[in-house]
Length: 542
Image (cartoon, rainbow, N blue to C red):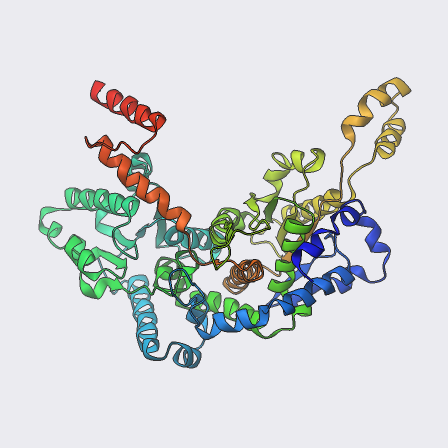
């Protein structure tokens, strides 16, 4: 079968009730599975076991198993950049690294040792600032993939973070964001980490220069000469530019072209997180991800969590033509996850040509959005319940809460389960009328009010459950989504590992900046030229 053959099923599938599918025996048990400590219930999806089996057969025909094997073995599957995709090997045992990475393995292993050493020395107080003080804060400067992974993990694993060392992330090029961060930091106790593969990223370098100036200005004269070389570290391939900036070679950690930015948390980019949670917890994070790697690469597709989620996502996107995906974590610690998955999914699979450069005949990545669950209930979920738009949803919840407020967690979980049920069941007109009748409304009032209480239902959802949010379970969760997205890219025959659309904005940003600084560029539209003129006039007026 071809994907287009499945698309012909839309009429039949979209008009049936998901609730009616539960008349089949053991649907909830048959359409759930566990992997790496995570539990997935996908029984509320608008798909039958038979339809899913057809999708699995199609995935096998498309060579998905070979694609997965090529990724893990180091084939250069990033075809437009002629690169391998091996972020997963960074969480594998050293024996695996040596087998896959060969000559580079020792550099990777040594980099991990260096990271562990820095973490131990900073957290123990052995490594101190230029003024001889123990570090109390770490400021991380990066953007995009050098920002999101660290941010989402710091938020998720806050209960595991040090009480004496706070990690702050600076990505926004807005000067207000820079000043806000620096206002609460002490130069003499702040360690700075710059993450930039090329050490030329405009936003990162601009922020780094501002922080450098702040540090030089605020340092006591006797320490200012050594403050940058002592208190700054970088993760970059451009050693020359980093040392020109004032960093010591020993303070620079490498990056590799086979690790994409949005998958780089597992590399030295994870140094800030390791400083926050410690080496043991960072190892547990990697272990959870590695267990999901093993599951993805070795499990039959019928029991393969990333593959099942990928196929259901393709079913919703291409067969049922649902354009969005809501990520709703019912856990305060996972509130940054939707933003992280926006980048991971849409930057990876937001493509319209296949690997050969040919125009696709199907759509790819959904529009990913979301926020923590109970807040979303009082915001955009109104649209999800009562508009005509059907938005498939991933609910994520932990069985055990992180706080001591057990009643709060019980109510939180109840809300999560209730929303998944409500999105599926909905409420038809006759139900709304009956409820109003039982509440004592008269017939005229019922006729007026009942249509406003109708909810379409039939919205598909997954329920992902963790025992608790821990380094291990969070690592498995991140790897699950990485592999789901990769599997979808393989099946759509696109390159999920480049991001040329990001590069265009960077190029035009440089062009426009040169015009603001007095240059000319006749290729810009009249609109943009007028906007530049308005900006320049406003700043001259100051």
